Image 1 (spheres, rainbow, N blue to C red):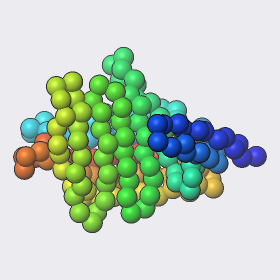
Image 2 (cartoon, rainbow, N blue to C red):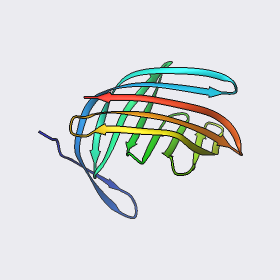
Image 3 (cartoon, helix red, strand yellow):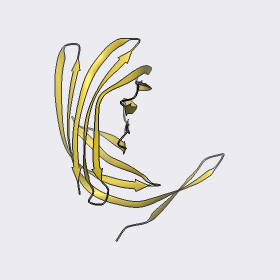
Length: 159
């Protein structure tokens, strides 16, 4: 049986009703490889999360636990585009697409840095009915035409 939950968000100018059709607990396995300034680091995460269907869109939400820090993470899943939002001390909001690079801002404790996201590989597969999927992503970040780093993300999730 699917749960139906309605969330009302009120702001000064409007009231929007969001209908959560379904929220399913999932297990998330993530490996991230980063190459910056000639250094290569790899991180592994095994986390519990939620697969959410909201107004016809699909989201994967979980929290990364690393070195005593908890970082909320959300992917908005799509086969042509993928959106990543990470909250915390360093806030990111990336849009990945193969068509063209996208602009973004990286919020740090020192201020906001403008960056470009160039997606080199984007493979997103998910089955909303059986609640499982995978993300295979490779991208580069640049700021002021300088390469910040190259990143690879491999993620699997299942109910």
